Length: 103
Image 1 (tube, one colour):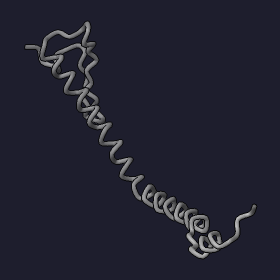
Image 2 (tube, one colour; image 1 turned 135 degrees about the vertical axis):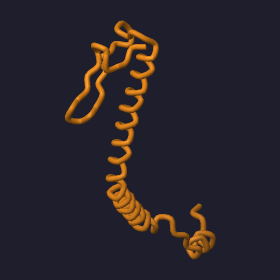
Image 3 (tube, rainbow, N blue to C red; image 1 turned 180 degrees about the horizontal axis):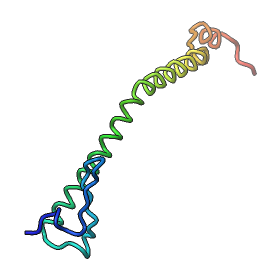
């Protein structure tokens, strides 16, 4: 079985220690194990990007909480300001019933 470090499509970044496979899964794969290794590297890259997104959302969480609290306060203020429209006055009903109907 061919080892990755012996392959012409393999490179190793000395600075970051990252393994780079320049294989094309449709044309330059030499052995079935090469495809498996390529898939593992792709999954690792996806996992790292997902973790970066999760970390970014964690940084935004406090700001989102403050924003939702502010919006809730604003909506409560609007509801309170419009509460006079929905108030029920039983005296008004009694006055309407006692008033003579126009003929």
